[in-house]
Image 1 (cartoon, rainbow, N blue to C red):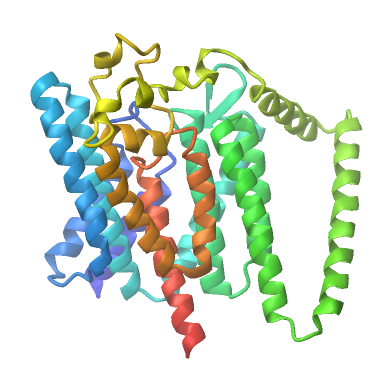
Image 2 (cartoon, helix red, strand yellow):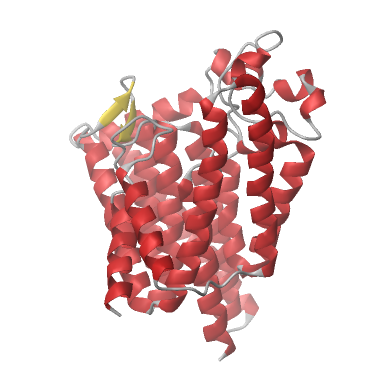
Length: 392
């Protein structure tokens, strides 16, 4: 019991300081080291681990990345190639650990988790309003992260975690969901991340859609009356939104609202940029067409100088889905997509919330970041808890 509490403290501590990056991206951060200790202490005194049969697809993907990257490393000796597979291996271990440990904890664990993430989102929102933290150039806030997109990815997952843990703990999720979404919207506006903005819009649509479906599902009134009520509520919300936005735009007295509106305009204008970074070639997507010989088995990560002959951009491909296809080919992609599909089938309507990080991933590579796997694990556990409660 004492050990379980100690592991619990370590896990929550790791997630609490996950927003602080002390060294450059690609290097382990303090939160990662704390998570390692949590896993080691858990494994020392727990010989039994629950392992779902379909997770073998995820394991196969991890091992396939190791094989591909070892071959690439043997030829090009780029250390980042080896590290890439290490990240996937570590993240999958974290995924399994969080599922196994959180299953043994009561709802008090998810309650603490809910408040940790909600307080973090609130803190990052207020810090962005007061310009406390790091900036990429002069207009893109990134808090204590190393990149605005990195922060955008985290806040999207933080919002999703607040929604699902709030549903488990408090049964209802509208209030905490709206609060988290509003704060997340403000924070993402200050990051001016286009990837995160696309993910945010998707999350809003998903949240509203789930809410409407739940409203009809739980309503004991006639459908005709429910539609009238829904239309009336939608009309009121639209009028209030337009009124508030008009007052904010025309207000010259509130510096916070002015800052939000100015930053929102800057974020929207970023979608009209036409530099090299805004083209398919400038984001590395063209490698799929220019190097088709890698499409079956994959090119592996790192050693990007290999593509200098035909490609303009020699950095990481700015897309999870284009990236996994090019780096690990059709074989690796199928392994990963089957794993995701199997997870989605197990988490019921929670799977709709995955559309947000998936849409984010079209323009930024996010599946190597451990927040993707932490969020995936918590979505899985929370959905399983709710399904068991509904079955009783």
